[in-house]
Length: 607
Picture 1 (cartoon, rainbow, N blue to C red):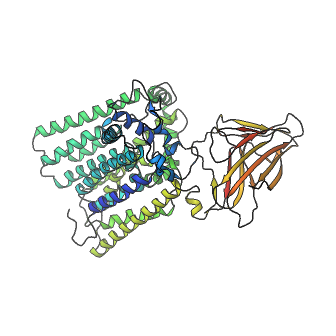
Picture 2: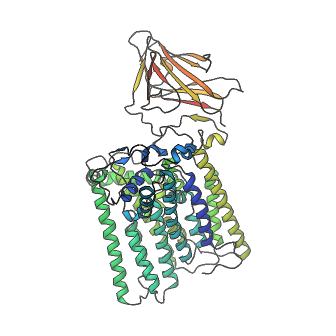
Picture 3: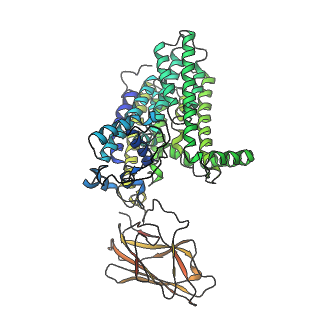
């Protein structure tokens, strides 16, 4: 279908320009390690750059730099500007005397996915001793270009719903995945191209499939076989072509062989990769344990599966549209409204009504839903035995390759006048720009500020924002008549409003009290409270409000915790962290504790 000359811009060109500008921006500004499992994939790329292509290594070891530089490894969320400091940005693998430690990669996907990034690493790291972070940015851009190539091909090829397709594959989550190191960008791009080409053949080549299209279909089928496990679930889409005329029977055999090779490789690699991962061992997520749990009570599996889908549907949709890695920070709420407007306008922006059989539309919609449910089920299985069945609540990114089929199935049902169609183009493009601005604002507040988006939208700021905190089996410290705990902290935002301390346990039926004192940087007591044990809830944060002058800002503070117990053996315990999570020093009975902090939050006015 030709785009009319008076169109604002061809949808394929819009996708390519917007994808390049937004994608490169994200490749640079998203901190390394902020993407889902990004450091794990970098370990794999690192080994592949040394010609170790299988995810099992004879002597597993990796440079500590890979983890030291990762944003996700930070104990608490903090501004990522230091990623661009001279020390970090120019850091090389040889900087620290080739320091390594044992580490098996958990990135077990096909080496085809990471081959371009591995070649870049081999050239820049081992031939030119190039710094790590600039190389990662270039590797991200390489992955982005693969995604954009697949998406551009898809939008050019698809015979209808071009604006809808372009908007869907420019969604914030899709671009986030395409701009970080992972297997999703490759898989999504190839999936889009496969869908676009299949629909183009179905719609425009009913009288005879062209050999050139079949060659492209063979190549894309083989690439799908090399993509993430399960990507071959798209192959039934080819059922649309069963009544089409092939150039000869040899082409049918050739395409069939290509599909067989792709299926065997995808399934075979998945089986091999599973055997060398945590799913092949004897742990909670092992295939054997999951299978035995499911087969012993199939109904008991299906019920929580259906409940999980229903209870987390809204979160999955949000994650499919826009989210940040590991769900850090918060996506600005208005973004979802503008993105819905962008997608809705895209339906009106397409040039004409499409005469598509009702059964074809039903097939596309039903097949898209089937693929999404199938992938949810597969991911659900991996968490079933552990009880973490709601852990998939925001994994909407898994639906990115399949969702376009649903929306293409309802595209072209109607046509509007040329003036309205042109207006829809402007609305769709304008809404996309607003969505990009809001998502980029969220990136800034998530990764380059302390307080996060809520504080910039008028809310309070709660710090520290713990990233890798585990309360189970965390160390605790008792407070009694003789032992006093002191914890200093630096207020990194506005006027202090309250302080929270996590209390682990409290004496039962005691008339004692916790002595809570907060000192400022001049050692003046800001607040002093005597809080009866009976009013304190164990296994929860104890909040103490602070009343400071309106012009008071950040600064140094110290929490002092003592006890006025009715008996010497009575003790209230508080939880400690396993690392140095925030600026401050912990001391117990006058003795400093290194690499440990009191588990606290403090609330202050937003910036």
